[in-house]
Image (cartoon, rainbow, N blue to C red; front, side):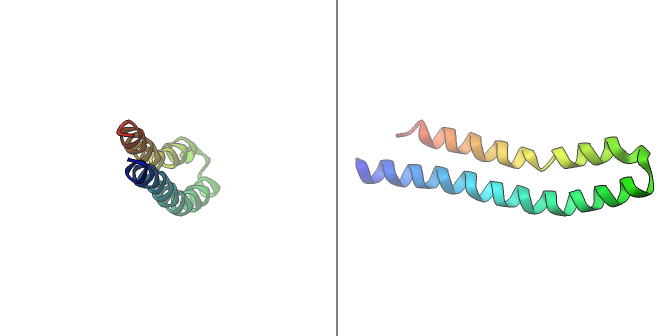
Length: 73
């Protein structure tokens, strides 16, 4: 029982960690493009912020999977 619980906890950690890395990678590219667009036209600020928020849903999905996995311990 202890090994199964440990593997489930490891899987939950991997789920959150990898989704965090993916989100950081996506926000790096989107953030640099948004800053460049805002530098040229300040009216694009709202669209830039909206596009920066979209990758955060990946982490939310990772947390959801982690909570579902932790419920099995």
